[in-house]
Image (cartoon, rainbow, N blue to C red; front, side, top):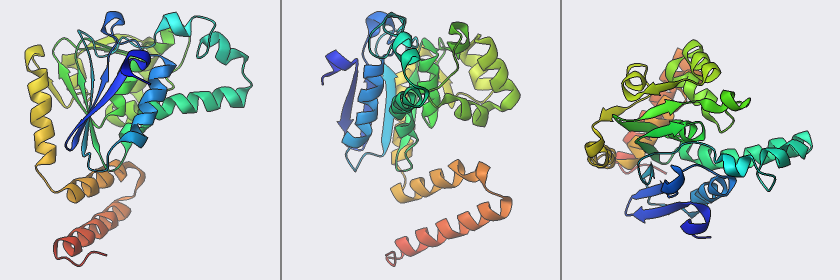
Length: 255
């Protein structure tokens, strides 16, 4: 399927892959077809890719769920999902989540380049990435509650990890919007830059990530990503084991 039919495209340039939401006429509102395509990207990704950049065409990152699709009566609509047996409905949502969770892959660093609206599914897509560079005009909201829904695209755990339980609850239960300055203050933004500097800032960050040993970066990501689930002693053991692998690899003694 093409970007014209799915609304999202994958482009690879050396060690960098770029995922672009390309429905600027509807502020890159998302559909199930886009989520399936994004899930497929994980299987299509060349083995030498080290950084994945996620961006949206036009003036918005993503305004969220395309209600013209979800509110209709066809495949992927609320009406269709509501008629499915509970397990089948849950399985369908799991399929959709796959379009987001592959960005957690241990062998790549994912970077969201966010301008304008990142609402609902758009906010969750930004949260799916390891790092978020926000333009000063970015507006973020977990708006699912305003539709009587819950965030279900793997965004809740990521949000709690970044800002803590009470702040995540307030953000999700009110559905309010926050600007880039607040997102930066509470730990959602890796960097905030003027709109005109967004592309350059992402290139600079990508260059920094690529400048260092790939295996070391992969080990560091694993250490940090798993730290919340480990005791202090377990984390220290993980550090020792990772460093032993690095030393052996650098000495040419890796298996």
